[in-house]
Length: 180
Image (tube, rainbow, N blue to C red):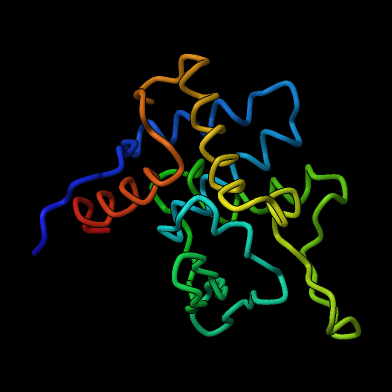
């Protein structure tokens, strides 16, 4: 009921698709797959840019009965860790979370491992290790730089002022306007 004073600028679903396609065509394929996975994960989690830094394989579980990935999503702003479920994107494979995770893990050449060994209970297996232990706001800034790089390289639909927080707008608009 309150008026919005500072609304994040979002991307259209098409612009996000254009971004992740461009990211996968970069010369540095490992970086491209990681950056695509970051944006797609934020989109599916409707997450804040820095929240990918709290994602750990230890907190992930595949639900066999309902066929979705469940992850305790760390909300940095309020200190909570609610369960987030991830489902396939049946309209656009470039935005499919499972395809993005698979490409990231396969192309990462061992940089990130999708395992949570019960023998190492005190170890944390970060999903995105290069986004962990950054200064406050660093992971969100790094995620925002991915979008800025897309815009600066002429990716269609990426307007000035969009940052990682804008992906939340993209996801909520998509949920609002697309019944599937």
